[in-house]
Image 1 (tube, helix red, strand yellow):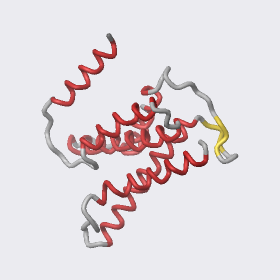
Image 2 (tube, one colour):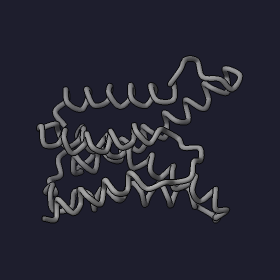
Image 3 (cartoon, helix red, strand yellow):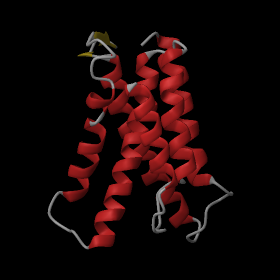
Image 4 (tube, helix red, strand yellow):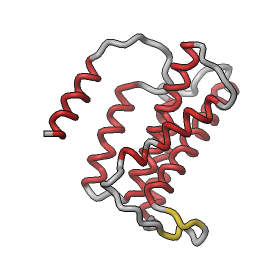
Length: 170
C-alpha cells in the first residue's frame, strides 16, 4: 500500500505546473536518471556505480536549489556549498534500511562504504565536469563546441568512471 501511495504522489508531482527558469540540466533527463538508479540497483549493478550516478544526480538537484535561492534573492555566506552538501547527504535517506553499511578498502587508502564512496565521487566528478564545460565554453567565445555538450561531458565522464569502478571490483 505504501508503494502505491509513493507512486501516486510521485506522479502527481510530475504534473504540477511550475515556473520556467534556467536549470543546469533538463528535468526529463534528471527524472530518467533518478528512475534508472533504482532499476540498475535491482538488476545487480554494483552499489559504487549506483552511488556514483546518485551523487551526480543529487549534485544536480543541489544546483537546482542554488538557482531557486538565486531567484528568491536568498544569499548568505557558504550557501552554495551548504545546498550541495545537503542535497548529496540525502543519499542516506534514499537508501536507509535498503543497503547495509559495509565498508571496504578502496585502493588501500580509504575504508568506506561503496555507496558513500560512489556518491562522493559522483559529486566531485559532476562539479569538476561542469567547471570544465564552463571553461571550454568561455574559450570558445561563449558557445558550446557541439549541441548538447553540457549533457554529453558529464555522461561520458560518469560512464567511463562507472566502467572503471566495475572493472576494479568496487
